[in-house]
Amino acid sequence: MSDVAAVNPPVIKRRHVAAAVAGNALEFYDFTSYAFFATAIGQAFFPSGPAGLTQTEFGSLMASLGTFWAGFLLRPVGGMVIGAYSDRVGRRPAMLLSFTLMGVSILALALIPSYSSIGVAAPILAVLARLAQGFALGGEVGPTTAYLVEAAPPAHRGLYASWQGASQSIASFTGGGVGVLLSLVLAPHLLDVWGWRIAFLIGAVTLPFGLILRRTLPETLHAPDHLPVYDAKQAGAVQIVGDHARPIILGLLILAGGTISTYVLNYMTTFARTTLHMGSTVAFSATLVLGLFGALSSLAGGWLSDRYGRRNIMVWPRIVFCLSIIPLFTWIVTQHSAFALLGGSALLAIIGSISSSAFYVAFGESLPKHVRGVIFATVYATSITVFGGSTQSVITWLIHVTGNPMAPAWYLVAATAVSIVAMYLMAETAPVRLAKPEPAE
Image (cartoon, rainbow, N blue to C red):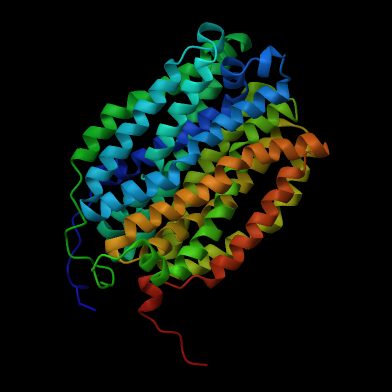
């Protein structure tokens, strides 16, 4: 192991952090907007069933959520391809590639004509756009998180990497704001017919600005690593998995719990409209609240992990989150009020987002530089594909077959419990903890 601790990382400026997390923000703006307008998108692309049979509102919503899930199918492929590209060529070119594909796919979805205009071509094109976007998003998080971990000052890696999670919440907040604004200025039928397209077009407008920012990023791949240096000899996929099986398995389990949590909470807009039958303005406001408090808590979690260690900040807030799910969901469902919906959502966002930031940096620190991009991207994309893409369809189905609006809460409790065990088993990687060895028992 070479001693490179004294080597300073590339100087990272605020605009570099913004550029690195821009793709992740655009991803969550898009998926948040899709969750907001899932019902309207279903009506636009899936208004009738097979053989011209009239489809129920539930069937149309499930078809829309199925297309939402299609955006996850190629994520593992994108993670492997773009992640490996980032480890071989550089973080910056990989981030430029993923962001371009992402922006073009969002623009395409906004411009595809409805089923009533072009028939079966509409849902086919919508699914193709989601597949292309999924490929791009699969390779987005790995290279950008690797970049933040490599470029940040060692004592502040948690705070810098926490912007990855915070960007998701900021995007949700922005998407919520756009949704609330559109619901206020447009009649409900106009919102469902074409208003949702405006939300996607607003996201696509960020494409040129994101590309300009990312072109200015200093490259970190070829600079000496300020994290522990491992043998940089390239290895095959089997070798990579074998050498890093523990963090890979634990990462998958933690991301499963975190992903299910994220998409259950993002589902609150659809849940409020279709299950609690609340107005669209109140429903959209729930995600706006989730975004605001989620962003603040993510940054707080990263800052705390730099001072008290990654594992402590992962485990204890997640335990509190798990214990809070049933009481808060019960409050939301039984009170059936805007105050309960917004208050419960805010509390869940605050408690749940703290531990996620600590995980991002801990997982990045656990991996050697020459495979950091591909392993992070592939593990993240695989977990998101299996659990994230299916979450909203699963809970919609559970509510439909059980008639119990508490079904999402119990699903979230089970996923969170598994993630807590995996977080406890993660190795501590925070410099502040490693510099002070625990006394022998």
